[in-house]
Image (cartoon, rainbow, N blue to C red; front, top):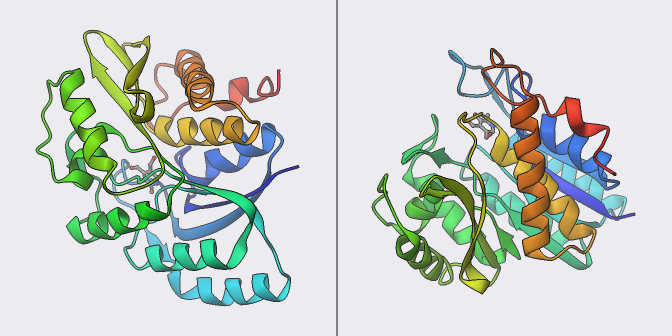
Length: 265
Ligand code: PXL
């Protein structure tokens, strides 16, 4: 069985970050270890939130992990919350990688042309540096724009996305997958290595937390030796199904729990 370390925040309410990564990766048969970077009362799309920064605790956690010689076959990074955590992420890669381990980074910090609450350009710069360690990166279009210092535009085309992919290649040796590419009435992922967009049906509703679900399923499928294209297809199909199964009045996330029992089928 593969063992993964997922490093992201724990939002107590909100169906995002660790509360989706842990159940989803586990359901796909991956031993899932967690490194919570912060505890939030709820995610930042609600009306206000409390934030307990766990950064000072992490060196002590690493101390015990060293003593116990823990190693991980993969790392999945999502919302970290503070630029200081990037150095600790590198310490984790340096100290706890099993042979052939892979690093998947979803540089969660924004959407719709804007940074999420609590993030600034200093965070973006730290993430830009961290990406050089990644084997796979999963930015959305907004994050790709910030990372490459490209002006975000609402209406773009395939050339714009290709250009983002080319600029991201300068930041990482990893495989680049730009998520949430949307134009012409479709949604998809741009797979930079193949210079192609993998298109899917565009649903009329947008839901929070779907990027975190996409990253979790994508990672589980990569660990199960699916290709990048297959892993994207699986992840997009899972997200689509979650959105379809979510009650209309459930506004803050998707009810992935409704389909999780079928994750291994
Ligand atoms: O889904 C990404 C995410 C994760 N964690 C927290 C968030 C968000 C997006 O807003 O607020 C705390």
